[in-house]
Picture: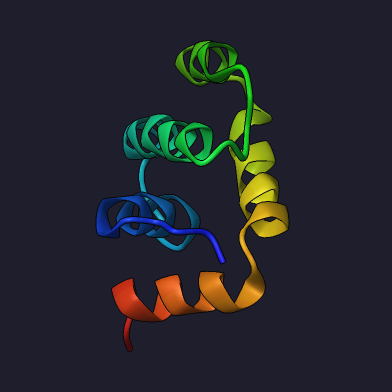
Length: 86
């Protein structure tokens, strides 16, 4: 299990489990990249930020896939349950 802080878990939940406008997705993707970089789940954070700013059409799906592959299923479910009850 990865030792995510409450703020880290919130950033993950907001990106992965909520449906939002493109503007909010950009903001949440940027926060998610920071969390993933902090936990060394991605490298080249600056490149990811540039892709987000440029609205690269693949960046969100790549980040979603990265979360699916990097965060253990049990932990992902626990994060979802904590922030999206009901």
